[in-house]
Image (cartoon, rainbow, N blue to C red; front, top):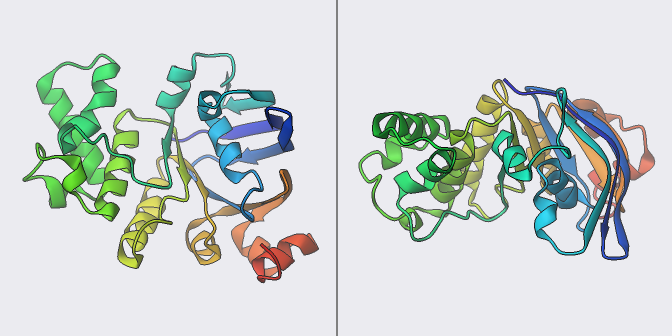
Length: 250
C-alpha cells in the first residue's frame, strides 16, 4: 500500500536560480495527485525532488524536507529512495540493448534476486499490472525497442512496479503517446492508485480531471493551491488558478 508524502518548505536552486520557492503540501496515500501549471513553473523539478532524481543534475541545491510515512527521504541512500519511489518519464526509455524480460528484471537483479523462477513470476506480475502481459508474453526475449511507443511506456511502468515501490511518480507519461495509448495509461493509473501513491505531472487539463483525486496548481515556482480535483476545476480559491484552467494564460 502507498504512504502519505509530506513536503515542507521545499526550496530548489539550479545554480543561482531559485526554481522552487518553499513548497509545502501533503500528498495522500492511495490517491492520484495531479501537478498542473504552465511550462517552467517547477512541476518536473518538484517530482524529481520526491525521489532525489534532481541530484543527477549538477549545481542543484535543495532545502526543506520530504517525508514518506515515518521516513525522511533525505536522510537515506538515494538508491534506496528510488526503490520505494519509482518514476516514469515523459518519453519511454526502455534499455535499448535489453529484452523485454531483462528490462523488467534488471531492478530485481540489482536488488539481489537471482532465483530464476521467482524472477519470472515477478516479471509476469509486473507486466500484468501494467496491462502489457497479454501483448508481450510470447516475445519476452525480443528487444524492448521493438514495442510501440505506448507499449514501451507501459513497459517502463512495469519496470518501475517490479521493485515494489510505495510511490509512483509520472512526469507527463502520456504526452508523447497517441490517444488510444494515452487512454490505456490513464486506465492504468486508475487501477494502480488503490495500491500506490501516484503523483502525475500533466499539461492536459482533461487528463487531470479524469484521473486525479487531488490537483495542485504551480506557478512561478510556487504552490498556488491544492484541493480536490472537482473543486480546483469548478470553484478554485485563487483567480490565477481559474485563469490558467480557463485558458487565459499558460
